[in-house]
Length: 230
Picture 1 (cartoon, one colour):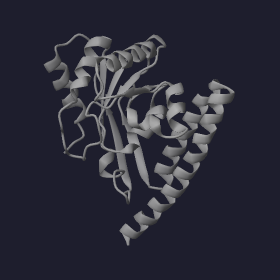
Picture 2 (cartoon, rainbow, N blue to C red):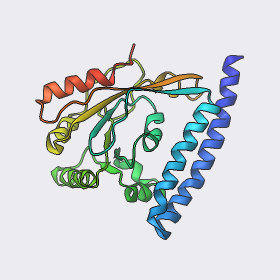
Picture 3 (tube, helix red, strand yellow):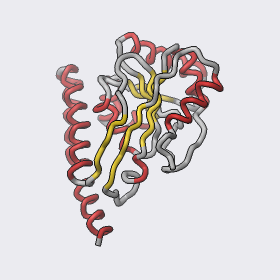
Picture 4 (cartoon, rainbow, N blue to C red):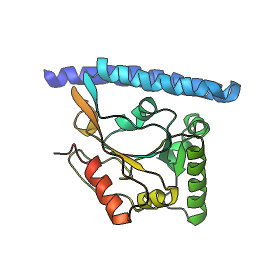
């Protein structure tokens, strides 16, 4: 019976959340064409709508443990589900998120994401593309925006602790920014076709200063983003 209720709640969630999301993608395209200043309120509405659906349709409580960073800092987030990727614009003020290049091919959404300030990551491209990515990141820092990265590179199962992608240390070194690591345990409830009621916790770690050796910063970030793993 509990599984059936969860399945029904998930069905309603998929229908309502993604239905409204499609309308908001259209609204983002209109905003980009008509007046770019409208784009941020559209994105903010999407984040708020997602949180409402998570809480009221799925029965998942979202908890913050610590103080969220703001401003030009590199934020390294554990990645267990789509939850934290969707929730990022709600958590931070105008975040510039490093996102895999394939996402920018989504009709409508991709161009709006570029205008908003997301940073495409082309893992298999050469040095020229990497320099271009770094130039965009530095521009976002100059605008006073936080940079958000998922240093594991892709979603990982709850309870697993893979190493960080090699590009993370390079960005840390070249951007010369402190890093704030954030653990999240969304995989236990959200990363299922039938999502489960419960709790998702963000645990915000202590800021790690810029300029540390690669081995040290990777070890500290890895330990902090896995603080909620069993």
